[in-house]
Amino acid sequence: MHRNKATCTLSHSADSGAYQEWSNCSDTGDCIPSTNPASPIDKLDWILKKIHESWTAIEHHINSIASDLGILRDDHKKLADKVHAAEGTRTELVPQHARNLDSLADLQCRIQQLHDPTEDAEGRARRNNTRIVGLPVSEEGANPTKFIKKWLRITVVPHGLSPMFVFKRAHRVPACRPPLGAPPRPIVAWILNYRDRDHLLQTTWRSSPIKVANATVLLFSDYTLEVQWRRASYQSVKKKLCEEGLKYALLFLACLKIMHDDCSLFFGTSNAAWD
Image 1 (cartoon, rainbow, N blue to C red):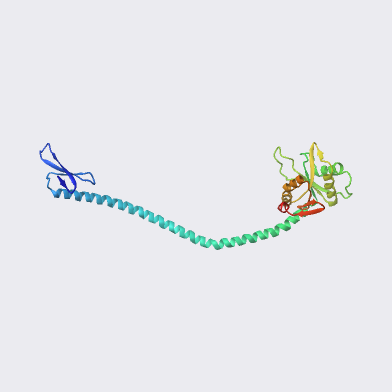
Image 2 (image 1 turned 180 degrees about the vertical axis):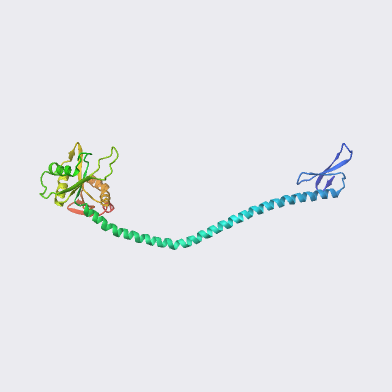
């Protein structure tokens, strides 16, 4: 027997001996019991009950979704407020950033204007200095000035210094002691007479290496840090010139002179020399 595409079966009850009708619903799989095989009221009540249960479940899910949507709506509003505030702050910061860039450019220009005369003054103050590199530690004793003056005049350059050879002072730089195993700190000697200083440097450059306690000691002009960097930038160029067999000279302050076929070329930077 068929009703509304639902399969109905008849089963015998052992207690009452009556037949009950069960309808297998295709949607839920539940059965509809009925003592009367032809009772539509029971089926209608069962259908209404299922509809009410489904509506209650759907209403519960809808309320849950509405609650989640409310939370998302609040989060979205907070995020929108933050984005709006950030955009307002950005709008305010754009002109301020432009003013800061202008101020930075002006400060850099002023720093450069102050740096140039400061660098020149420091270079002039160092012109009478002679940097002694490689002298073993503690070789100068307790009085570096007295030792260096005697050592330069008697051992290094016994002839050629003027009677006006005036030696102001000598000390190691920097003041802090290096760690164990590090090379000895250079000694800066202040020679007041520039002619004696130039004669001292030229004589030591032309003579054989100076040895003190089996250590090679070198003498250089005392340049500022910036000039030292500029002069050191020519190392690769000088190495290439030596490989090519070309004569060169590094002039004061940091100018490279290259001599080839009775022609001399002068370069102010290492990049210009490479070009």
